[in-house]
Length: 300
Ligand SMILES: NC(=O)c1ccc[n+]([C@@H]2O[C@H](COP(=O)([O-])OP(=O)(O)OC[C@H]3O[C@@H](n4cnc5c(N)ncnc54)[C@H](OP(=O)(O)O)[C@@H]3O)[C@@H](O)[C@H]2O)c1
Image 1 (cartoon, rainbow, N blue to C red):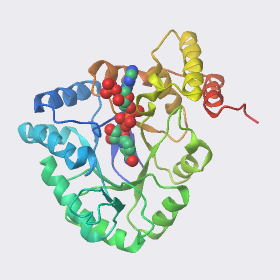
Image 2 (image 1 turned 60 degrees about the vertical axis):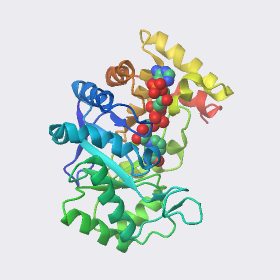
Image 3 (image 1 turned 120 degrees about the horizontal axis):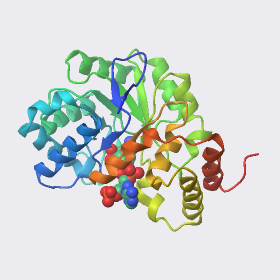
Image 4 (image 1 turned 180 degrees about the vertical axis):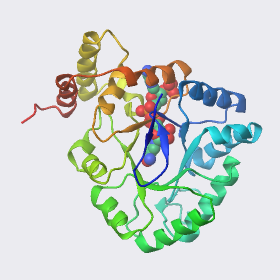
């Protein structure tokens, strides 16, 4: 599998498919280790994490593997995120979830992440969700500090609207080299709301979360899910019967923004199948057939 440079402004490339650990449970370290090794065998070198995943536990589970096999670290690019405070965490004194982008919170969160992961650095840190209270200059100072200390090598954002992205990137010296967004055959908003256009304009590759609609693509019973499945089954028959996950990923990968899907399965054969989506090419007409099925109306 090839790698993609996220932005000409940064020397960071991620594998074309990234493995997301949001759904990671307290499984034995050897199971996580074999998942990572299976991914590496396929060329999947990039891992997506966040401080809050698994109620602040996912990075600890993954970190046990890195502790046992320190040589794995240099073979991987590790992405993590910060800024969300979950209800029930010590910082949520009133019991509600909220977002924090202060220097104190971000630095503390990164230090905890590095400790949990048993690593000295993150390849990429993302602001997990945009806070209305973000100060671009304050964030820039914080990012400079993390960069200077060697704790974080690159920075980006997640779930930012086009105007939030541009507001921040135009006021900061630190390059923001990705926006990690939700996008799938069942969630097509980024095509129309300017999110993907902004990525192309700023020459950054978007990372795509829930690229298989969190599994509802296969099992969803809504009219929309059923229509999209029908269209994808037709297209699969035209293409020699690849499985639907490959059709759904190939649909994303055709977009000129150069999207990088972050998949959430831990099943080896499903990871293998996802990797094969790279070889699948949809025609423009097949691509629009899926879009039309999803949006529920023909192209104007
Ligand atoms: N930035 C953000 O705000 C944000 C938000 C959410 C997630 N993320 C990131 O994105 C990653 C991926 O999200 P996701 O897990 O929702 O991605 P996803 O790949 O769209 O969905 C994964 C789910 O789909 C199921 N699945 C996969 N292939 C299948 C198949 N062939 N048949 C039936 N079910 C199938 C998986 O089940 P099995 O496990 O049983 O295979 C799993 O439950 C997360 O791990 C996280 O790193 C980021």
